[in-house]
Amino acid sequence: MSDSGEMGLRALKKQMTREAIAEAALKLTIEKGLDHVTIDEIARQAFVSPRTFSNYFSCKEEAVIAADDHYTDDVVAALHRRPAGEPPLESLRHILVDLARSQSRQQLRAYVERVELEEQYPTLRPFRMAQYDHLEEELRNAVAQRTGTKVATDLYPWLVAAAAVSIVKTTTRLWAKPRSPRVRLIEKIEDAFDQVAAGLPGPAPANDAT
Image (cartoon, rainbow, N blue to C red; front, side):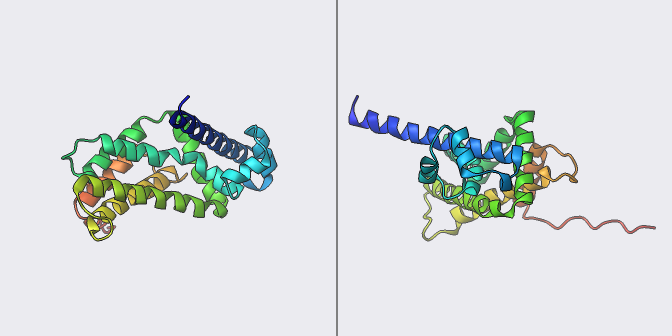
């Protein structure tokens, strides 16, 4: 096997190990609650040692949130596949709607469980915010590449990335709230993009009760 092939295989093994640890952390946390899960338990579930766990994650909270790390790669890869002349915000609308549409009922329920975990355990939130920051950074770079703008000096890639990530954060959290209207996630995303495209006009005034 060539050196490049060995390096590729090594990187793949590391990625698989990271994913196994993250999935184990999320599964155990959903089953038992974050306070009742230890790093040793997560390591056993993932068939690795606690030392290996520490090579990938600083704490169990980081591992739990890392189960969704693939989302950034999925969105950015899909953006690179969109037509070159398509406005980036329109591209991201198609991408986010398509990703939501591709989720099974079981996958959507699992996402609701993750949102509920973050509400219950605030120590998870900084790692979720870091994940969103990473998504925004990757989108800035991708949008700049597609539009010939510069991340260092131009507002455009920053604004597009910030708008898209804000839509991801707000629509998923509102959709997952127990007391929210059970609108489909796709409809929430489309409504959010419509409002942004329209310049965020104010809501229509409520009719006065008579």
